[in-house]
Amino acid sequence: MRRRIIVCLAIGLASGTLCWIFTRHLQLGAADFNYALQEAKDLIAGRDPYIRFQGQPSYPLPAAIFALPFIWAKPEFAGALFFGASSALLAFGLTRQGYTRLLVFLAYPYWAALITVQWAPLITASGLLPWLLPVTTAKPQLGAPILFTRITARAIITCLILIIASLVLLPRWPLRWLSGVGYHPHYIPLLALPGPALLLALWRRQDADSHLLLLSAVAPQHWFYDTFILWLIPKNRREILATASLSWGAGIWRWFHIPHSWAEVGMWAVLWIYLPMLTAVMLRGLHATNGSHLESGPATPGC
Image (cartoon, rainbow, N blue to C red; front, side, top):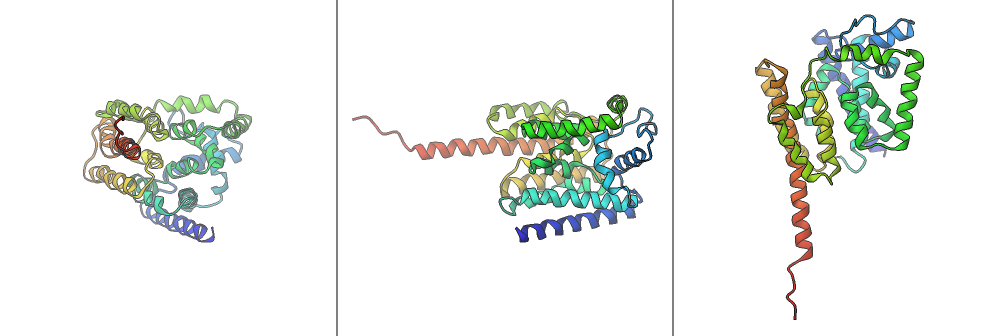
């Protein structure tokens, strides 16, 4: 356990430092985490956090509650602390049965999340650490697929407690937040060609990972970092390395090409991220079927 904790803290420190370097160099402040930080500061000051957004995209109030511990720091440092802590928690969840799954940190969406200080690593960690599931309320389009595939009575109760607390603080926040949701540019993987092919995951519906894949495919997403939750699907070295390597196809395309539409972003997310995940799930089923045939052995002719 001691070695595991040291490794996780080292990952958190390294990722937080890199996050700080990037955001400071690019003068991004806390990047995407700026929204939750500002909402948290307004909440502490007794102001309505949603006035400044005026119908523009913002975050649910639970995100501001989770950001409260970071409001004392300068934005770029607060973002680095948040991302470093998120990465350390994710590493802790991934190393429950060994260190192989730490290879998910090689996936392009993780690095896209690091540069822009996204919630995806923390929400992914909630899929491995059940006590973190309330964080799924901070970004519901990412959190819902994880919550619905790992739902328990305790998870429901803790999420409800957080939501009720947020309603006590600001009773009308859901309406204020929803008024800006429509302005948030997005794509839906299932509707982006060749997204309908993801329905093949229904063939493997007995595999819980197919549920996560399909639920994510119908959720609105923004950029490639939102797909990072899918790295809860690959379990072994081969699956992780294959999906992580292919994900960089989306990153390289984004580096050299400015997309003309969100449908185009969705297409590349499906091609380089979703379809490899689908392939991993389907091949897993094929290997299981072949294995069961080998175990049963050849039929013995009757006497």
